[in-house]
Image (cartoon, rainbow, N blue to C red; front, side, top):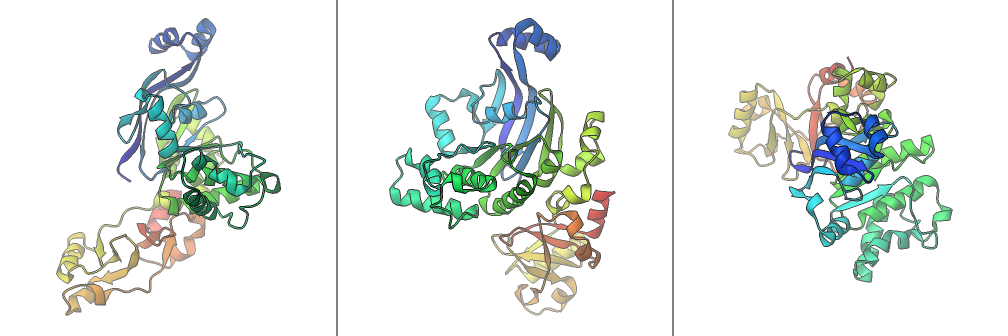
Amino acid sequence: MDKKKIEIKNLTLIFGDKKEEALEMLENGVTIQEIREKTGTAVGVNNINIDIEEGEMFVIVGLSGSGKSSLIRCMNMLNVPTKGQLLIDGDDITKYNKEQLLDMRRNKVAMVFQHFGLLSHRTVLKNVEYGLEVQGVSEEEITKKAMEAIELVGLKGWENYFPRQLSGGMKQRVGIARALTNEPEILLMDEPFGALDPLIRREMQTELLSMEDYMEKTIVFITHDMNEAFKLGDRIALLKDGELVQIGQPNDFFENPANDYVKSFIEDVDKSRVLRVRTVMRQPFTLAKKGESREGVIKKLESFNREFCFVVDDDRKLLGYVAYKDLIKLEKSNINDAIVTDIESLHRNAYLHEIWEKLDKSNYDVAITDKAGRLRGVISYEDAVSALA
């Protein structure tokens, strides 16, 4: 994840009739409260700068009135920024005309809301198909894409039921499926689980993480719950009064809280139960590919002073590992006959409290994979201990 998918630059959003006057006051250091009293305007977002990487699960968290929902609505121009830039794949969408915005919303950016917005007279299948119908897609393609999305969110077999027959969690799955039918690159989720009961909410968090392995999308998720933010986010942005307080990986908030507000926000969070392997793992020192030359891999291991390295295929699927001692004895020109395939790995969405036993038994780095079996990183016992210290 090293490509910037979304770039938010000096973004300010002001609601009301006297935006220019309020903006000038804001830039001159006048407080938000004074601006509201003198102009009748409300500052929703104040000079935000954030970069979101491609394929990242990025969570924006804050209390009511912090500006989090105002900000995410700028990402598809439901809210028009008063100042600043918002770039998607390098294009400033604040400069888009109506046709460009319509195309972006249909094909690149989809949104899931807290309140499901399902059409009560349409079945699950027909609700999911709706977005494609208005685009003039063929009936065969509509049904194919809708059923793929329904299966992805775990509702296969429910396609002919009506919203009134579904639980809250199932309704939200329909909303997610509907957003996925256009195959958007970016999924905006504005407190999608906020209206659900706690148990169903936890189930949906787990489901979203599971779906993410297969979706390969950039997800921006809004919540007021720091526990939810830590469970889901690769990185998190904490907002207060429309301003960015801190941004970073979950563990950054524990190790280097920006101020007392951050400390108070996280004081009741149990790190072992919210920190996931993916937020603590690191990239391996070196990797080998199936079919790679024996001499080349030996040089890599010697260069990094490693006893072994993991082996992947062209799609980064984990195949096993090769050991230095075995390669030295190997008479073949490539490493294939030395690959040890009997290997255990950890899933990247596992929580730290779930993995202690497996880590404690290993003196080496343990491979981290996603549900597709791709190597995403490595973790050691020392890494986990350091994260929880």
